[in-house]
Image 1 (cartoon, rainbow, N blue to C red):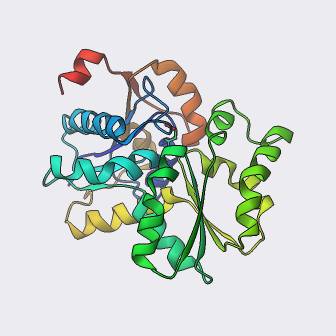
Image 2: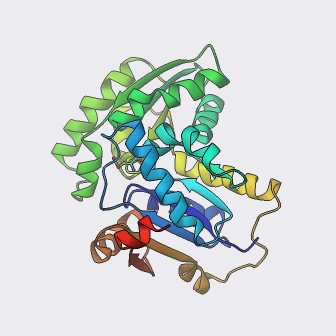
Amino acid sequence: MNRPIGVFDSGLGGLTVVKAFLRHLPDEPIVYFGDTARVPYGTKSKETITRFSGEIIRFLKKYDVKMIVIACHTASALALDSVLPEFPGLPILGVVDPAARKAVKMSKTKRIGVIGTRSTISSGSFDRAIYGLEPDARVFSKACPLFVPLVEEGRRSGPIVDAVVREYIEPLAQEKIDALILGCTHYPILADRIREVLPEDVALIDPAEESALSAKFVLKELGLAATQSTSESERAAQLKCFVSDDAASFKRLGEVFLGQAIPYVERVLDEEFQAA
Ligand code: DGL
């Protein structure tokens, strides 16, 4: 029960998901893997992302994880179904289903918007999850490929951000959506800007929040919830991060995504990763 949860992403963005986990599951130790050497996943194929995801899960299993959370929305959308049969007995959660459930619950008109990377949107995974829950829904999806580089360049506001947000979000507003899924790890960071372009009554769904709540439920159901409670000061030490490229830049940039200092980051060497 006191084993860690393994969380992974294509890079730093998944720390927005870790942030939600630290808030909702403060006693759970987390081992995070950011595939910074191979980021971005948002332009890659299903086959490639499935292979990367399998390698990362095998690596995380070395840390005796009790559950895997695919924080990367692109990997959740493209690889979750394919990796599941490879790891029987290991609960693996993605971010797509929890977000779809929340969107269907929040939407009154059932006109739901989804934004994500190109690979996420072309996979149609969010659409399928929503239609599976609500066959009468209408889903309006849009790839927003410029959002990730803007956020990673530290651009959160200003004329360039406003222009890009308008370009992507205004067409969705015109479709009269009343819920919008922020289907990428980086997008919650632009939530305030996105909100400015949408009518007030449109619900913004952050999959990180929903996934943390869903993981909490699953851990409890499986009898795997942590039994030790951690004090505020011990909590930071419960997060261990591994990356496939430079650890120093991950530590520096990652703090923006996590909203606090990252206590431990280690670069994983290729041999170590492939031997997993
Ligand atoms: N983490 C990815 C996602 O949530 C965004 C960055 C990338 O393209 O790898 O879809």
